[in-house]
Image (cartoon, rainbow, N blue to C red; front, top):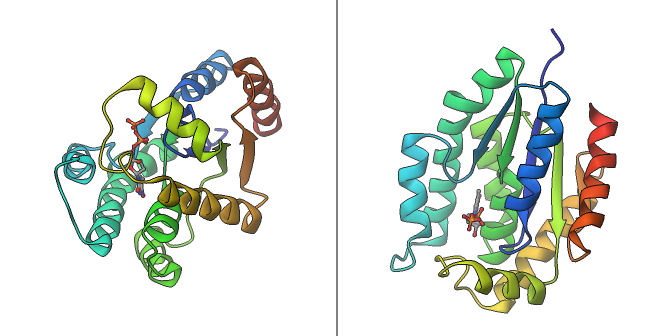
Length: 205
Ligand code: TYD
């Protein structure tokens, strides 16, 4: 059996991940792959309950609580969804994964990256996505696209300065892990983004 791969999608709120995710799913299915699509925080009943608490825009929590809950949801997600799917030989596409914790809780909230490294090691050991697609947009473009879609959640309500730090942290991660993380300029017209995606997927299928 040819093993499936684990692909994660990342980007600022408003980067257009959802659109690109459907496109990616279709490409893989058209190549005959069994695909599991999932998301973080979430992906399991417990994870989705944690997501509600994490995104509730009336709620508040300490930045470390936020990070711990993200990783708690992830532990469950790996155990119940991601590892079993990969063991069956399926491909897994996750709308966000651990890079989001480094970007949002590390960059945005300013938590020490070392603490996040420890949580990552605890929750997933050396396990990493085979490929991460980082859809890069400026804070301004992301903001315009968020406003256009739906009421803002707790993260989307943050100021531009927060998202600048999130973006810097994502770009730093991409620089640190160039083999795994592909940066896609998501301010381009949709057709161009799709072309970039096609090329990247051909290289891993
Ligand atoms: P998002 O993926 O943007 O979902 P939607 O498209 O429905 O708005 O929302 C998830 C939010 O959670 C996003 O603002 C980023 C945040 N997040 C973290 O802060 N840390 C994490 O580890 C993860 C997985 C997400």
